[in-house]
Amino acid sequence: MKMTNIAFPYLSIPDNLITKSHWIQAGSTSEAKTLIDNWDYQKDVRLIRTVRLSFSEIAEHLSIPEDELRLKICIQYGTGQGRLPRLWLGITSYDVDSTNQEVQPELFISGSKLSSRVFIETSVVLAAVPGNPGPLSPVNFGNIVWNESFDIKLEPDDSLFPVEAISFNSMFRGKLFQYAPWYLQFEPGSPQRDISNAVRLYINTDNSDFFESFIKKDSHIIQSVMASVIGQIVYYTIANNSFVDDKTQYGENTVGSYVLYWVEQYFPQSSIRNIRDMTELLDPGAFWATIYANMDKGLY
Image 1: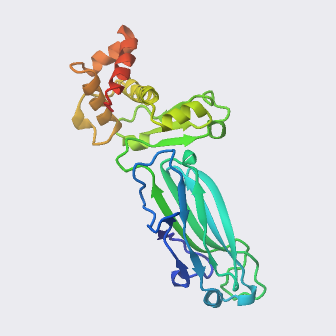
Image 2: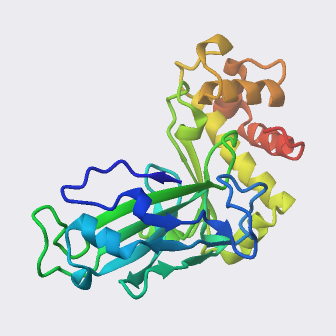
Image 3: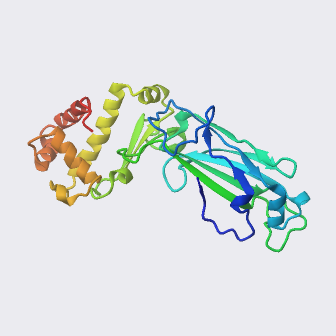
């Protein structure tokens, strides 16, 4: 957990006036890990914690009469990579005052809605405009007077690239591929980029049969998806004439380094030019069939 580095333009609550437990897994006494081991979409996330405000001391510190101070504890949570979550999933709030200073928020998040991470933000906000505030007191409804965030990774740092399960009807409404089972977001022409930043795979949760098979790791589904993904990356990378068959030109974990590794594994004894000729002129079907065949061996 970490406090966000925000300079509020008014008095805020110091950390020592809020007693809070760690987020723990519901039904357990163990502190929630920042990385969930062996997570998959069938695993739901259940978290609980306790937050208690030292109300009279907080009122004094904020220069607001205790009988006028009204606060809310807000828990907002989301998922997806980025500085902030790609998708906010929900928010819950709890009223606190001098007679009700402690809350025990509990979160249940369906695994089918998650991708890459769970981001949880706990905030204390002003829930009513005080009648007699001090000169530096927060005075507007919703003013944030304390804030903390907690990040749980669902994928290890060494995962090849982000995979996100989302509703295409929501995220890609009106796109030509709205009803596709998956979509690869890839920027060709940048073999020097880290593959985890250049590639993102979206799985369509609206296609329930496909999504169910994907999260159960059906071997034929995984083979098809990975063949499509790796085939596209290799095909469009080597199609660029500036791409060179030289490992020294591409750093570790870059698109270029992975393409050369896959080419070496799938097309031994073939040069980039030979493979480019295969895809463009000679036998493009053999190129794709070879990619598919190697997925069955787990070479990715």
